[in-house]
Image 1 (tube, rainbow, N blue to C red):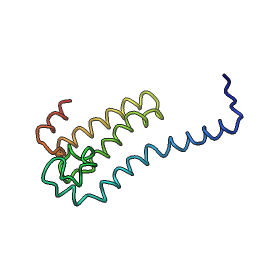
Image 2 (cartoon, rainbow, N blue to C red):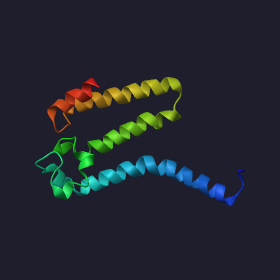
Image 3 (tube, rainbow, N blue to C red):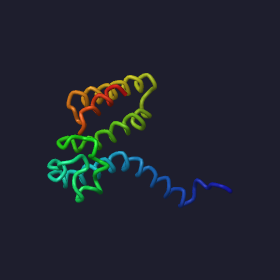
Length: 128
């Protein structure tokens, strides 16, 4: 089996991969935020953690978080992408500094804002 780096198929797949490397980290979080933003009134007025039957298809996105922090799953996805992908573009010394800054900032913000639906999860998040 050989790989011809000059073939049209190879060039197409290389270009496609380059576009997807840019689209995925920005497109997926934006799409998830947009879906929840269009249903924000229903999400914010929910009586239970998962909401009613009309929100069952989206409850995995906001179920952990308090009603007014329905968007936190998108922020958590952005945090995870930053800690796993964004750091690759930095030198090792800056990777450690930026990773610690991101981790500490998110941990303290979640603790202070009390973003979780159930209060004890704030403490669990902070300890972990």
